Image (cartoon, rainbow, N blue to C red; front, side, top):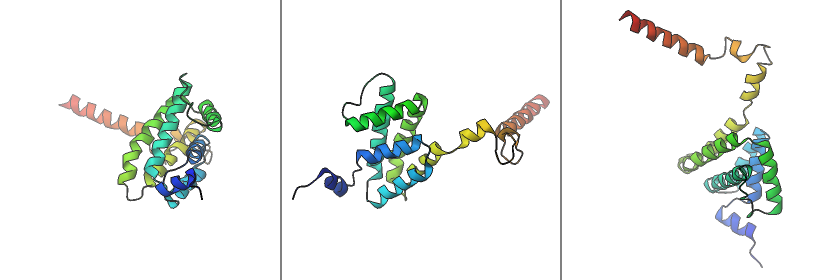
Length: 173
């Protein structure tokens, strides 16, 4: 019987490119539930999440370079190239670079974590959270913009108060 690439990848705990693209696509769609499911399935299949994250960074880098006019997609299959181009259309360059940075920083954390999936899950939450929508449209539940909600933390207000107290203290000395 023949040994397949899939069998070798499974034996070594190496993720396949499809799972990497599926994961990135769920992030672009802000599909938190599906992204968590992908991480869980990879972990339960024995996939090395550190290696998976390296591949995520590599693909995000290729997409960013593609957006900059450098075609680094040549080593991908035709289907993967098309998927990368679709992702490039959706993601802004600044967000791509932020994702590359955050996922690259997560690689050593995955190795050291008690729960190796946790650093990835935290990034999924960060990149799929709906906070940006709440900030721009206000809080749909109360009808009040987020900035005017008294029950939410107001970091700028606290910072201004602290700055004013420091200034008054300096003036009185």
